[in-house]
Image (cartoon, rainbow, N blue to C red; front, side):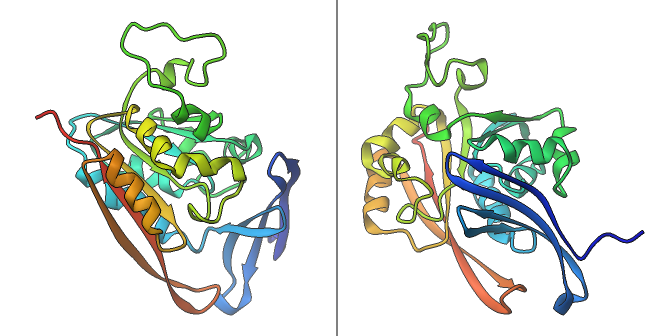
Amino acid sequence: MSMAAFQELDYGMTPLGELILRRREVLSLDRAEVFEVKLDGEFLMSSLVNDAEIALADFALPLVACDTCDVLVGGLGLGYTAQAALAFEKVATVTVVEYLERVISWHERELVPLGRWLTQDARCQLVHDDFFAVVGSPARQEGETAAPGDAASTSVFSKRFHAILLDIDHSPQCLLHAGHGTFYKTDGLKRLTDHLHSGGVFALWSADPPEPSLIDGLDNAFASVQVRESKFYNPLLDLDDVNYIVIAQNPSNN
């Protein structure tokens, strides 16, 4: 029996609003299968429009100088950034921090295309936590004991990373939650550097061109900053589109 042309795979209320995962066939694209996510009544992501999510890893990770790299990903979504990171030969671990537990369950229940791929890769760990709380806490030095209730109290977050890839908000000026705003200020970005190794890279996906205030904040926190465009064709809207990848790198001790 063939699958229905439209299926609502999951529905639930979350701290960020109504969350819906659906699958449909696009008749205008020869019945191409697409998985889509809506959050709080707004379209959030699509499996047919993932070029920039992949570019987030593809642009950033070649800049990291490490033989065995540990990568932290903020935001799981449909898993394309995590998959792209795992494709790099030098990547030893990918830790994905996702605030919405239902999103992790989609992968564990294999409701989304990459669910089996990510959950069966021993290098990949999906963690239910608040990315902004984790990176907002100072990284612990080796041997330092975590305080009770410390957001970074688990062993996963007691280490530094070679790369941190962030894809949560639509952009630093279009947030999923107002509480995320302090992260994009200079002080928040400086705290982020504590979680990176020397020479480590932070990369941010944005649907909008980055504002000068963000670049200034990154300039104050990192040794170098660059903005790259990810240009792609959006088959759902039948138009050429562009997203932005902002890349900042820690100074190297070498």
